[in-house]
Length: 245
Length: 52
Length: 227
Image (cartoon, rainbow over all chains, first blue to last red; front, top):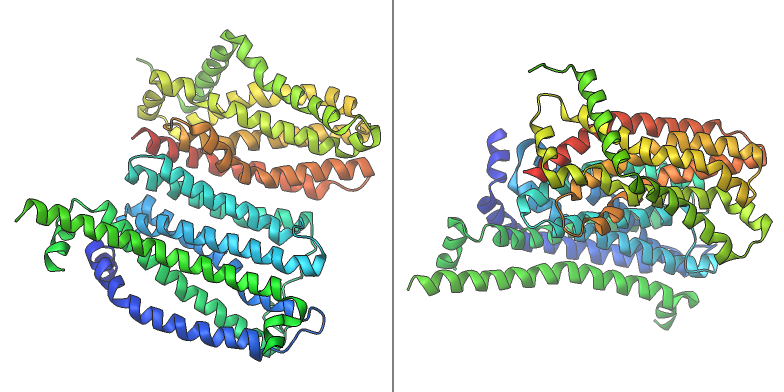
């Protein structure tokens, strides 16, 4: 088990494995996406209160979930970087940041697009949107700090600390903002006893969420492979790449 | 079909959301992929240029 | 060469930092002046409508305190970084988190404490109710150390950068938001005569959390910045 983990952490090994997995992951993603889109746009019944605009939920909620998930992944990488100095963790952390920021931006934008017909205004200082906005700043901070430090190994340790401090703060910020204001709909999906949402609406949502998860891995692999080439360009295994291809 | 596209009057909002999602997801895939290919090219030039 | 105990080292560093600041007394006034200036800008910008000002006074004062704190953060480690003392501190036998705590303490005494003293005057000028002013002071007393502690992490991460100041704000402001929310809310509740224990307890929780975790994070960030 330790051997597998150790092997996975080796850059050339990860580079190859990620390359092999990409087409399969893309196929799975395409399948899930088509299913999810059909489910969300066609199969799910029209909401009696919100009409068709509720269909934005199939983008908005998975994007919001991913925005949080990716930050947690970054924090986890942060711990691995501080404790074990694993190069792969450094690459995964910094590759995840723009993807997470994109999900956050998407959650905010679709939130606005959903809010305009519902609440009559493009922006409301409701708890979820406000804490998502702060999350976006946390992501931008990671990206900014990493690009500001020239030595990328030091930069990785800096953003590792930042990610860990940030992840501790996310529940605090979220709780603070929610306590401060609440206009947003209460939790309808995460109530495990009885979700107050119709099954026919819920299932496409879960499928879309899963498809976004797979997408994250695809985008991550793509970005990580590029980042690995950039960082390791002077190493032997990268040189051998050009000989083989 | 036109009912589907109209989305009960909310067409602008719904399709903008899906369109934005498509754009963002595509960018996060395409841009790293292009960088990757550029890096592979650079790599080839470095190692074949100096070798043979 | 006498070995200092941990407490002695803490006090020594604290006194040293304070002495250094007092030698440059002009610098001391800067955060305070900024605080007063920002607060003064609001009536000028919004119009001197008493009810309006009184209503938003808690927010104005706390935003000003936040900005003043952020502006002064650089001074925690800057001079030591520039003259090499920071490296010496890192090499010393004493645990870095404790030394960091001493420096943050000094920073708070120099930047937070003056705010505490000026705040009632400014609150009065903005027309804040007197019941609320007591809570205002309490929130500043509990909140500003949190600002210094969290800010120290940001400074430690960016100390090596040329344009560190800009990105420092980006890093630190999101982390300041909970303090702002609960402090402003406490004062507002006090003005309305409502219970403030929930907000004060949250602020205390933040203080204890920051006291226990931020020195370690700051020390780790310093070690990494100096490597």
